[in-house]
Image 1 (cartoon, one colour):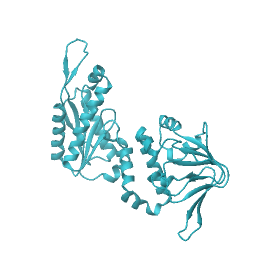
Image 2: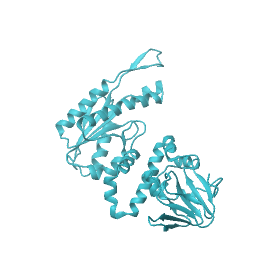
Image 3: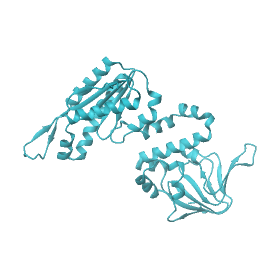
Length: 338
């Protein structure tokens, strides 16, 4: 460790948690962050970072004064930024995982919060908690983008790392399907006429989980997710999604009624063709197989619907009603005019 940098114990993280960088973290995610964050004291004249070093930490200045200097090709240093209490330091470089092209120097004894803490790199933290890291990096990217609004559109469209982070933050970690939050954020951008929504809920799933546990349910969901992703992959378009609990489905753009109905029947047959699962502990003590079946509700937007929200909720409610009535069938949603 640099002689001018000393570790401190029990950092007060309230300030860093108020920053936009951690704005959308859940309480349990913030608790995890607290164990991976450190507090340091940088002595006057000490360097926080220098050119050529990889930006693997983000700093929040609690007390003190830090300036950033960049060397001129002709010689000499130029001060390009000065940070005071409450400022984040190095967020742009941290977000890109880049190398510093300047150095940060303490103008007085300064106290900083460092994330991740000493001994933890950005890569190692990403391995430990990829979903949390995705949120943090996406927030960091958003902060940088907000500062340079004039190039916001260019950055989003041209920087693949931003697009990849955007995808990961909406990805269900258990199945790899997109979460419903993706629709909430993106539906106005991707919606086009006609758009097919095909929703699936597996029947009698509780029997499988009660008998073999949640791991068996997770394995089954992975198999169902593979069927959904296979459809969008073969079509070369569309989105495979996980909505709520074990309700999943696909959203297909440029899809008419004939194709949508065919896809619904293909999915229905594919679920029924999944290999049966032997149940180990039934009340009758008789060995039986759990066979898969599904309830499917599908519809074409707009199809007379007043809004996407109305269409989505109507299709979802029809799915639940069909499942409660015993399932194992395909139904089409049509919004009733009032």
